[in-house]
Image (cartoon, rainbow, N blue to C red; front, side, top):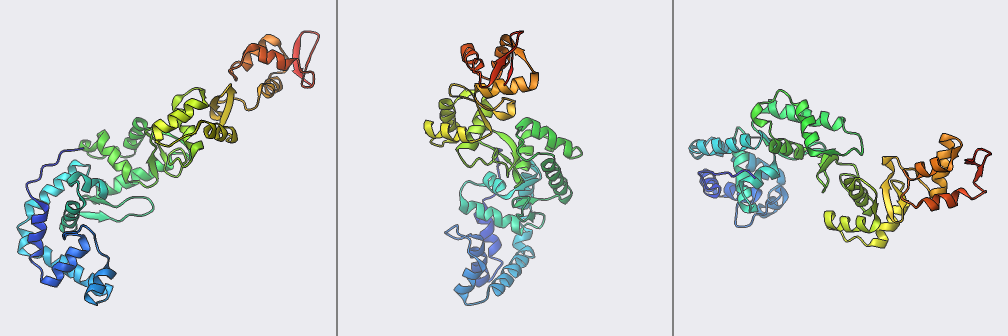
Amino acid sequence: MIKIDLSFKPKEVTKRLLSALPKRAQDVITSRYGLGAKATRLTLDAIGKKYNITRERVRQIENHSLSAIRKSKQYEEGGTIFAELKAVIVELGGLVAEKDLLKHLAKDPSTQNHFHFLLVIGEEFKREKEDDEFRHRWHIDQELADKIHNGLRKLYSKLSDNELVFEGDLISSFLEEVKDINEKYKNEEVIKRWLSISHKIGKNPLGEWGRASSPNVNAKGMRDYAFLVIRKHGSPIHFKEVAKAISQYFNKKAHVATTHNELIKDSRFVLVGRGLYALAEWGYMSGVVKDVIKKILEKEGPLTKEKIVEKVLKERYVKENTILVNLQNPRYFKKDKESRYSNV
């Protein structure tokens, strides 16, 4: 996290700014933005009930009060304060998710509320409201913000539904979409902050990125966790190790027997040996050894015993004798005069 050194104390600044307002207006703003002893921000309705006025009247008082502060002597005297906040936003990338920005400015919610109020009051700061695509965010340059928004949209459109991308590759892809931005923003930390603005692009606990709607990003059950674990391992792995890895990576209690049952039920996984599972997307054939032999012979035609053993061992972690025993079953396989086997 970037170390931020500011020359002012936000609570002192807000107190000074609020002094430009009459008593009731001060109370409305304090309640609305959580600037009092309690960090809770009250709704328009809650404040209206307190003063026995409508929520619309509360909104009018709020808007009038913000306008009055911006025209006040106290606001004019705080020019350097807003310049420092502007520099922070630039340092963090020019467009920053609200939660991320406030987290950099302060740790406790009460102080964050005071910084939030200063951002609201500052005329240079623009807040974009949360929507289906993006989180609440702040910027000071509309052109830059538009470029980042469009870059994130294009990046999302190029991801397939369940695709997973390593972080470095995603950052490189995003930089291709925003080639003409200022060089000072082209660093990994800034790009990751921009990526975090998107509701539609997400990162799983293993550090891989993809569409947030994908179970590979937002894993919701044991099968999804198992898929990510096996994918990360990169080769067939025993179900006991899968359960252990789920507990390690996702901090979820994974019982060995439950994990095994979930792997059996899901077509994404292929049993390739005693307790060993691989991903179907790696190209492994489904089924028991007999089924694998049948599929190989369907594809290749008659083969010798040696060739069948060679090909099955690429699909299954089993003993050679297991393959030979299956081959001797006359219900499924027959041998011709040239000692080649084919399906019955």
